[in-house]
Image 1 (cartoon, one colour):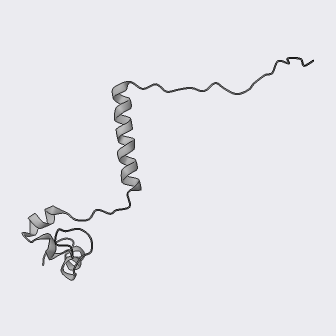
Image 2 (image 1 turned 45 degrees about the horizontal axis):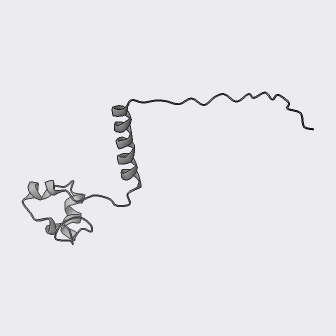
Image 3 (image 1 turned 120 degrees about the vertical axis):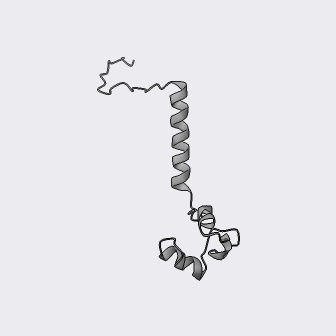
Length: 86
C-alpha cells in the first residue's frame, strides 16, 4: 500500500500581466515591427529625397536605374562628400 505524504512547495505562484485590448494590440504591433526591423537582412539606403534635392535621376548614383543597392563612382563621391554635390 502506498501512503499519500503531504509535500511542501517553495515555488511561488506565477503572475500574469493582463493588458487591455487596445494597449495589448499596440504592444503587439510594436513588437512585430521591431522584430521585422531587427531581423530583416536588407539595408535600406536609397533615398528619393536625394533625387529631389539634386534634380538627378537615381541611376546617376546607383548602378540600378531605379535606385538602391550598389553605387557608381559618382554616388560614392556624393556619399563621401556628406551627400552634397561639389
